[in-house]
Image (cartoon, rainbow, N blue to C red; front, side):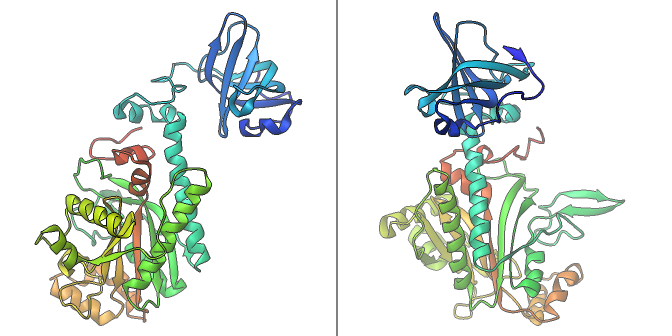
Length: 421
C-alpha cells in the first residue's frame, strides 16, 4: 500500500464498468466501503458513484473504512464479487485518510441509526447507499419534470427569492435585512411565474421556497424545493390538470429508468369534486384533514386502481385571492389538489386573468392594492386565461420511497429546530 496525490496508473474505470474490462489491468477510485481480513486472503470493497468494486489481496493491513483510495488491478471473474468480477494483484494508493470513523457502519445493508444521528452527520451518513438512493430518486424526479415540460413547450425560469412584500400569507414569511430595509424570503414563485405567462405563455421553475410556519410534524419543512409550472390560454383548470398528469408521469418514468420503483400514473387520473369528497368523508369543514385525504386515496385505489386522485372545486374561502371561481358553482373554485398515497402532493388551479377581477377580489377581502401593484401591472397590459400548479419535491420523494418523515427526503433539512449542517 502506498500514498499518492494523483494517479499514475491506467485511466479510472467505474465499478459498474469493470465486467467490460475482463483480463485487463485497470484503476478504480473511491472510498473504502468495507474490509474483510481473513487468514489466507483479504478483501477490500471500494465504493464509487456507480456502486461497489472488490479487490482481493494477500493478508495484511488495509486502509480504514472511508479512506479515499485508488486501486489498480487485473479484472478477474468471481461470481461472489459485486458485478461478478474483482481486481486481482492490486496496488492500493491512499489519496486521503479519515480523521474520525463514520457515525455508524456504512457497509451494513440496513441503516440502524436514528434520524437525529443521520441529520447531524449528513455529509457522511448520506454516503450510505440506501440514504443516497433517496437523493437519486429526487434528482431523477426533477430531471423527469424538466423533460416532460420541455417537451410540452415550456421555458424554464429563475425568479427572485428575496421579495419586497409579504403578500401571500402574511405572517408565514421569513424577514431579512436587505441593506437596511425589510425584505422577505419568497414563499413561492407564484406572482413571478404568472407574470411570465405574459412573456413565454408556458413557464416552469425548480427552486427553494420558504415557509415560516411553526409546524413540527413529519410532513412540513421551513424550506423545501418546489416544482412550479404556469401555462396560458387554458379553457379552465382541467387543462392544467392534464399538464400536471404529464409532468408526474414524466417524473415517475425518469425514476423508473434509474432502476428504482415508481408508481403507474393512469392515462386519466380520477377526479372527485370537493363537495362529493366532503360528503363521502362525513365532514363539513372547508378543507380536507390528513385522515380524509387518506380515506379518499384508499377509495381511489379501490374504485379506480389509482394511487393518484384529483380533488377539484375547493371552496373559494380556502384558496388565494388570485384563484378563479367556478362559474357554475358559486362559492367553489376552479382549483384542485392532487392526492398521492394518502397525502396532498400538489396544489393548483385556474387563476384570474382580468385586471378588474383582481381589483374586485382584493376589495372583497379588504386588502389594499398597493402591495400588489408590480404584480397587477402584468394584468393591466393583457393576460390570457391561465393556471398552474406546484409540486413539493420532498413530499413526492418521501411518499415514493415510503419514508416516515419528510426530513429523510431533504438534503440538509431546515425545520423549526434545525439550521445546520
